[in-house]
Image 1 (cartoon, helix red, strand yellow):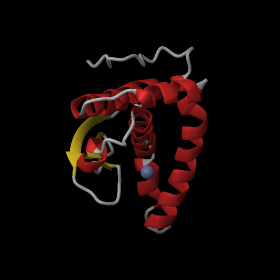
Image 2 (cartoon, rainbow, N blue to C red):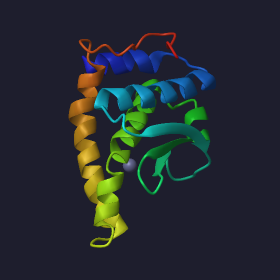
Image 3 (cartoon, rainbow, N blue to C red):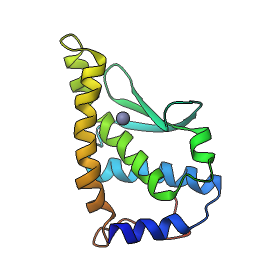
Image 4 (cartoon, rainbow, N blue to C red):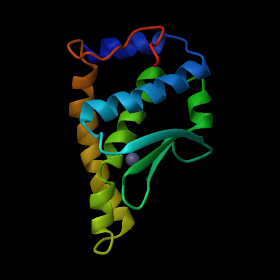
Amino acid sequence: MLADLFSRIATLIMSIDEKIQLFKKSVFEFQKKIGFTDVVIYVDEQESDITRATWYADSDGHLVSIHYTKSWIEDPSTMADEIVQVAFHEVFESQFYKISKALDKLYSDSYIEQLRHELVRRAENFILPLFLSKNSNWQFTFPWEVV
Ligand SMILES: [Zn+2]
């Protein structure tokens, strides 16, 4: 079911602006769905050779800035399902800012990041498909309905 949806999405040809809008829409949709609404999230663009996207939080964790990588989103091989997954990844992971900061004095950054990503991967495998299932109210139609 999910594979069907993804393959259908992957066949669509999107403009760069549509991909950017899809990323932004996905970030804010997932923020709402997860209930991660006690923070303000901004979406911005970045240059990077190593990541598809990154998130940053202010010291209190009240503001989260999620940056997609320009070259990645502009790449013609970057498909809609990947954009949605990366948006989910960044939103879900940025929830762990406060706990990561609390663990900062006890463990290395790389160990904390590893633990965080174990949780994010499980969420990608379990929660993301639920959000994208036909029973969800996610508006996965083309052209993308962007607010
Ligand atoms: Zn990550």
